Length: 588
Image 1 (cartoon, one colour):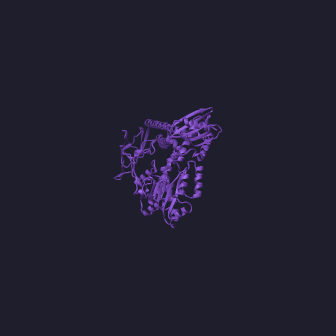
Image 2: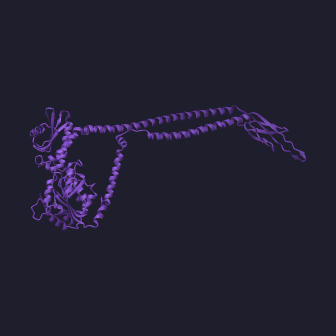
Image 3: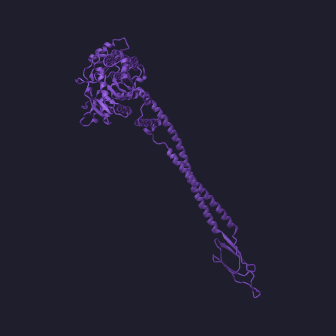
């Protein structure tokens, strides 16, 4: 076991300790506490003793010490000390500054034992190694996805190369087809120029009579467009032109009543036929080439769109599904906000049905408490707060009183079990399941309290009371009865004051710059006792997910009231620290 002993102390006063060894570690630890400087400076030091090392962490006047083996190094022990310090402060809050020696030993020694076991034996306790393991897993997933994308990109590149090859072949074929077409055309021109024709015709001279005698025609002349002509007189009317160039035809015949039918030679017809076939072949190939070019351009465009691009961090997150998850979370939050803005309340149906037949409550009083406040709760039960049958009779009068507490950071541990056992016996707790009971979470506790109170009871008023206040219960009930039916009531001991901007001070406000240059708080009710009417508490319940919290719960509530139609009621009877005789509360 790497860590063998641990303690928590305020100065030299030991508040809790645990040892897992039979050595004199406790004696040496107390000697070390006496040597630790008593100033308020934070420090981290280590002391070597034989084969053990005592590690000491001092923060805000609270000292956390542990004894570990030399092989444990420094990282794990100081991580253990940081964890113990946070748990101790979160659990006991301001009580650590006034607690007596070993006041928290019974409860917190179990926590020390559990955390010593965890940091000594569990490999996940080493935060760096755990983060490295998680980063290694993420890196493996990213590399695997990137390999898949690159493999797909290689196949796309191969397809692009094949497409480029086909496009090159197409261009070569088109060039060769154009060359072949030109060759055929010139060859046809050559054959045409070298060819000669023979034009044969016949002039039919119809019989003609004149004064009973047959007429005879002479000097029949045939003229061609090339300038050739022939004059003849033949009984049969035939004429012939030999070696006539291409394109020559008959233009004029000086005769009456003739019929002419030129006949071209067979070689000319054959060459014309083959020329037509060649032209049709070339035209068809060119048409197919145009279709192939269009199809290849479409395929090439699609391949360019699918070509893998350089992967960025956003692309990697998209691969891992992080962006999609973020989008769904944002959509869900927007839907929830919209539903709440329309008046949606959790358990609204069951509440309305259960409350319809019952008398409306006057008030729900929530008394803040913590895990280390068992003695205070018993003191309240023995003084002003009813218990058992008296508590039931008070509820019949319309007043609900509950101790308000959240859950431990380690759900289900001894702290939670003790509260559950106490609640089982007294039945006077309102346990906030979704709230972590810690000093730094105190401003958020008020949201969970008002939301839970509205969801569980239908009352005129909802009252928040600190655990350092004694109530005059009958006086408070009378005050609330006089205000019954008043909507928008924000009742309390109103005050204002300067915003503390110095870090480390008791009332330090981290967001002090939001309160303007004058650094003064707005008017708000003192946090010891705050009363809200039903509609204001419902407003907090509906908008709890959107409401901003500050360092203190009283200024937090005051900031919410500024933005609504709230009626500020400053009642001096609710100033618990005053000396007024008629006040309904006093500091315990």
